[in-house]
Image (cartoon, rainbow, N blue to C red; front, side):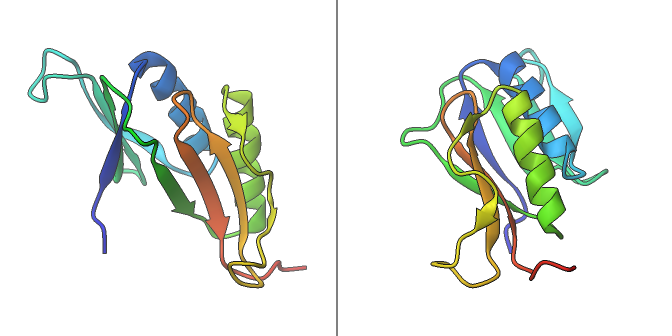
Amino acid sequence: MIDHTGIGVSDYARSRAFYTEALGAIGLVKVMEFPADGPTGCNMAGFGPPGKPEFWIAGGQPNEPRIHVAFRVDSHADVDAFYLAAMAAGGRDNGPPGIRAHYHPDYYGAFVLDPDGHNIEAVCHCPEVE
């Protein structure tokens, strides 16, 4: 339903490095990048599956209030990998990997605050496969 979305970040280089690592753990890559002197007028990077930028960061002012973005993944292991990569890249814990039964019985997610405090999540809606 949503083709793409984006957020503002205060330190573009730091956020680009954070998202490269965190999203790379779930198979999303930096697909496009524009310099500040390019057509957008600010540093921008688009991340997504190869060939399709779906999530953008733009240098400047971070959104107020901070934004929550959830990335749907295929397995609990993907959620775990996202969380570990995001934490190693400088994210702050906002809810470690686990079942969030208050959403539904198979909701397995992890929440990390990015360098600007945006709440970034990886979520799997499938039951754990043994």
